[in-house]
Image (cartoon, rainbow, N blue to C red; front, side):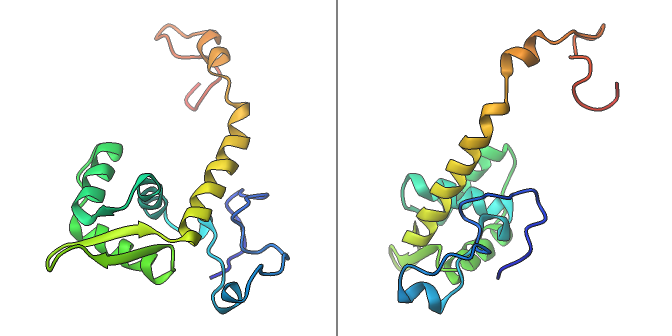
Length: 148
């Protein structure tokens, strides 16, 4: 599962390409999954499950609320199955028709590492400077973004 990290994610604490030795025997059986090995949709699922375990439709609703668009079953459940296969999510039967999903320890570590990595890099975002930047006649900041 290890890929070369070409997405600008150097120093990511969830990077599986690190040369650190595994902390226990279970880690040697399966390669550690790195956040950049996942799709953003999958990372969003993990982040939602970090709050609490949920059944499939509750995950779907939370994703739709966050993304502002409909999430179909054909997208959600294959991604949940992939996360289960990667040992990031645990699937259990809530009743005969409903499955419940929860983060595993590996899933929780991945989300925590990703949040820490993003938090460390968020310091460069200066909202006040963006709001005080000179504006064009449309009120858009000059020199920020494309099309200037």
